[in-house]
Length: 123
Length: 99
Image 1 (tube, rainbow over the protein chains, first blue to last red):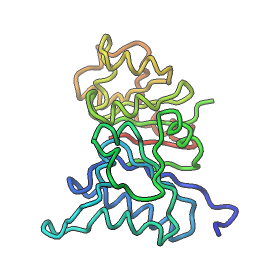
Image 2: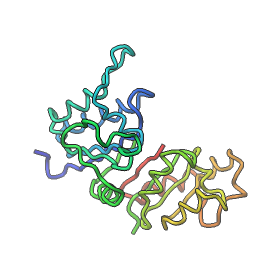
Image 3: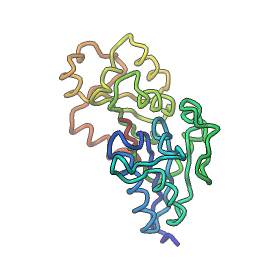
């Protein structure tokens, strides 16, 4: 259980999975905070929604599979996952097989989400 | 009371710009820096979009000077130096970086 003085953290993920190290870094920040029993949420926006594509296979480019990293989140009790529904539509992902527990949010709901958490880290 | 200090370091036309603009509330503040300074140009669609959010608008003076736009920025965008930037970060509980 989080201690009473612990703060909640929202990690905002906006970059595609393999163009830079930002995607992996942002997810590792979320996992680390969850490991220390902080209340953590992850919001996928913009090109960040491309991290949710179900058939990622990064073996040939020699880096960690971002899709599998996200699939491991429930093991760390990291189950507050949100996604910008506009970005899902823009990238044609609205009918794809996306991770469970992922909650699609519109503009107003995202504004409320940003207010709800104590801290925000934008990647 | 203002709630979130947003920083924008991406040019108008980027998804960072459009996502930031879409989520800005009138009680938020936005600091334009790096490539984000071009959104402070008076008369541009980008500046109009930002003004319509009602958020308080700030501009990192050093970056705007480097870009050569300091004399062309809109009146409702307040230029700040690095010390004032730090003071802004102290004023807000939360910060969201768009880049």
